[in-house]
Length: 636
Ligand code: COA
Ligand code: AMP
Image (cartoon, rainbow, N blue to C red; front, side, top):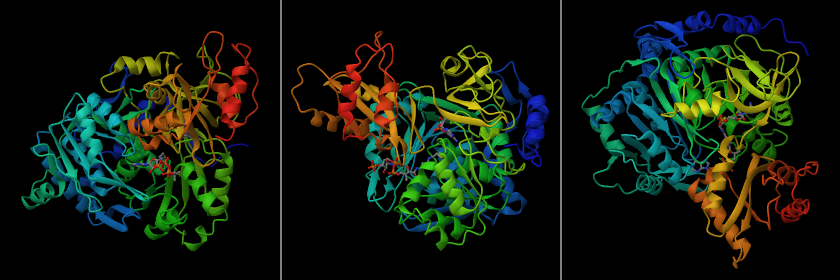
């Protein structure tokens, strides 16, 4: 298929690579700078150069104040829609600004200043958005920790970020279950070596919690007092290169990577994407159905739409079961969303409950123009189903926590290119995406290889890992000199369309959530009865992949394997969190290995997935694979 000649994409992308400074200087005009950048890109700074050096800015000013000053004060900025609590809350730009000013002042009273870190361990409530923006306002660096992570994961992040303050809530709400946050918060602070000065805790009416005297402060009381006293934090000027936030993501070990996002590059890139990629205009209603604990939530529930002067929807619910598979269509119709962004897994869940799309036809979706999918590979059957049912373009796009915005997508604002199922389409401006072999040499069209991004990365992408420049270089820049390694494998076709087929490391993608199997193996190995283990992702019809752990028990263990398997499942839930969806632990006599002792994960995965497989020539004992096949019978 030839690409459509009417799109401006090719001209725009070519210009972004030929004259990156000119391109991004123009995009930067959409931002209100306190002091414009002296240099658009300075290759001598940072690990691979820095964008917008010398620029001084405030992200919160760009997200709120300027819209209030220029006529959007009464426009709804945030719609919080929660089928889980049966409530819908709307905040105008003026109201959101006043909440953010008050919380910023409260945090300053706790001694939080520019550059200090603040951890947010919050459910999907409006206060979480207020907290992120309040940090941005006072120049503090937020680090949001997803509510589905357990205490130990939170503790690891506390130790790495060393926050002055933690903002949390009494509970999160999952269908049929209230998740108590406070015991997890307390346990995490106990486990962590670095202790916050204080915690501000939001009491939710669904389940309140006890406060730790001298450490915990009631959010509502502080807010009331700050508003009564007319406290308003002004915007603190920060350098464009100062960090806006740290977001931890799974790495190849149990220690997560602290992805740093700077203020200037993030502002410019994310603002650019709102119209040029997503086709959304200021004043329109946009919905991103992710969680603020993920990068997608940062960029497109909070910052992108607000920087653009759009109305953003924050949804506390699920695609199915809250109350039914029509929930998404109800939200789109009720709030008149023009575009929606979610993960393919959500569509697989909806399709299973409503294969004929009966719910879709119960709602007025006339305002709805485009569906965007990301977070995992968009499998063609799911995309086709969504296209047929919704009758709007369904756009897959590919990105990572590290990049903060889309690497490859189909730019609606520039003019859509023809969709090819299975491909997230083409590299966005600023990204030169190559597919290379082991020697870092680009391979030809339709040849699989490692997908890499030519340095420098465009604005918005991570400049480094928090306090870990060396780990950043080692993990991303060293294997393919001159490139950033995405750790995704795939190919480009003759039209330059990118096809992302899977990870080259131990990361798996479970219901759009990124998890490290290496991290899970560390937990399995910590069980006293486990001699050896391997965790890999096996196919799942809804979640795409789910983790499956194979255990070899220590010699002399007399207890029933089923009992140990149950303990292992509970251990992963307790240490990593329910989000791991770790429900399969299988005891085997031994793990199939090569003669040099490497576990044959790829072959085990093929057996578990029911795919065709060939006997690896280097296998130590072929019978070990038959044993795996036997152990899997009736389990997956
Ligand atoms: N706090 C506490 N627990 C959480 C949680 C949170 N914020 N989010 C998820 N969990 C729990 C769930 O309750 C579930 O617990 P359970 O084992 O007791 O059932 C477990 O973690 C696994 O969650 P999940 O993988 O989300 O499965 P699910 O069955 O609840 O829902 C989907 C399945 C497909 C509907 C859901 O995963 C989904 O909507 N995914 C979209 C993901 C997405 O938007 N990703 C962002 C990238 S764009
Ligand atoms: P995360 O950092 O959680 O956003 O996960 C990033 C990873 O998810 C990528 O490296 C890919 O492996 C996968 N991913 C995200 N979006 C897509 C997509 N559209 N197609 C294929 N894989 C994707």
